[in-house]
Amino acid sequence: MQTYTRRLGHQFSKSTTSSSQPSLRSLYSALHASRFGSQQERCGSTIASTGAGHIVRKGTGGRSSVSGIVATVFGATGFLGRYVVQQLGELWYSLWILLKGSEDSPRHLKLMGDLGQIVPMKYNPRDEDSIKAVMAKANVVLNLIGREYETRNYGFEEVNITMAKQLATIANEHGGIMRFIQVSCLGASPSSPSRMLRAKAAAEEAILKELPQATIMKPAVVVGTEDRILNKWARFVKKWGFLPIIGDGSSKIQPVYVVDVAAAIMAALKDDGSSMGKVYELGGPDVFTVHQLAELMYDTIREWPRYVKVPLPIAKILASPREMLVNKVPFPLPTPAIFNLDEINAYSVDTVVSENALTFDDLGIVPHKLKGYPIEYLFSYRKGGPNLGATISEKISPENWP
Image 1: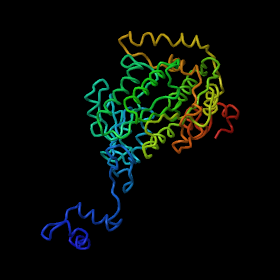
Image 2 (image 1 turned 90 degrees about the vertical axis):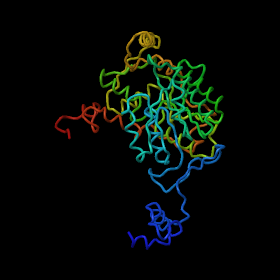
Image 3 (image 1 turned 90 degrees about the horizontal axis):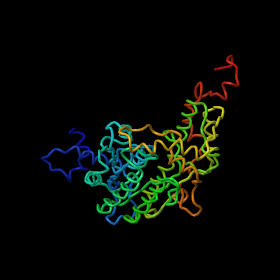
Image 4 (image 1 turned 120 degrees about the vertical axis):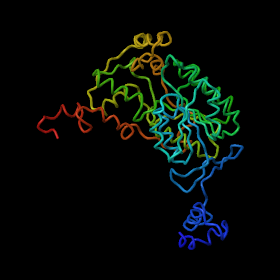
């Protein structure tokens, strides 16, 4: 240690006296300066009190770095949340991820940052004080909360309107929240036949009224490894051998890859504030009808396409009992699979990006095409293994099987 300290003595002599031993911090600083130069920038926050300018600053690099920015992520344990947390970790954010369920639910997220960088915190969405506590030290707030069906505990209006408006109000009173990002849904409109989409539209209006500088992201149907559309269809096909198609399946949708949506959120956080107060519609590069998307699913899992077309009025009748009983029985009802009344209403109309809307292009992102890598997770549904499948294995004789 003495030899080492003599070698770097000129580096720390100004900060230590001749009678005191150099501290580990001073030794590290001296070593860092000798390797990278004394003028090397360290990790730190560049957030201004006005909220203007860049909010992400480069540090020494790696997930162990600290930018000085604390992001509070509501809905982090959901499908989109894990991809957002992963990319936030790369930006050296300190993350407070909020959960209201089991303590094990965020354990997969803690691996996306260094020790202590990602902090799970419990909160009660109906308790304003608990929300204020988890937002107390935040610079950035992301609201990813959403659900495509109702439960006996939470309805569409409470989840999508009340909670979102409450977060915006608290963020406004906080005074130190530089960026607020709300994730809504493509097709959200006061005139939508879907209750969830009407609630999302009301939430957007309430947030922008409270926080005009908030950024709204409106992704289309999100596709990815844990998605709730292609996985749901594939499981139904493997179990029952057919797929119900509501109506004639001609409604248009514009599915988007989940990694692209997370990248859009990161792009908004890293810009110079140009995305503040704006609404972005995030759709994939290709428009599908519901029937065409089902064909892509069948082609990927290598099953022979078999459909049962269910007229829209009949589908609504099949889905109605759960909607009528959800708040009347003293026990939770099963999660709707295919016949979800609100989803049926949402898919009864076209849901595509508007002509003059801000899109991925305005954020400098080129979204992935759906066919190929983004849906390779469906290989797990192939009969006989990922290299086979019913449409392949039934065409070859057993003698030629690998």
